[in-house]
Length: 87
Image 1: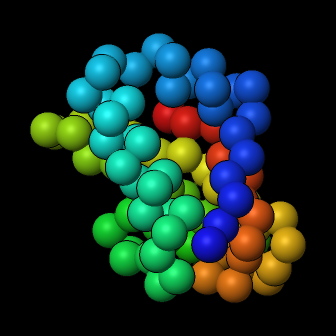
Image 2 (image 1 turned 180 degrees about the vertical axis):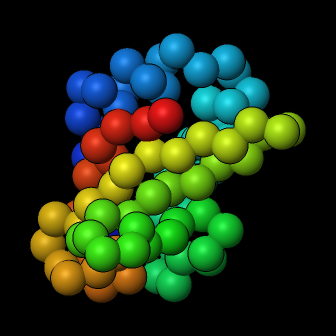
């Protein structure tokens, strides 16, 4: 349903994570790719911007990745999404 592009910065962030966290990111990315209406648990619009955040929780840690729709006004309508960076 959606094609995902990853920046070098996101790839570097992902590679620094432990296996458990990376697995959860892979799961969240799979949801973004395959489910039309993405649950707010995983993706939330950043107020006052065109950006969204992909959210992953592992234990007490919260990880965020800034994402952007390349070909539509919002993530729901997008067929191409870019993962920009993580923190």
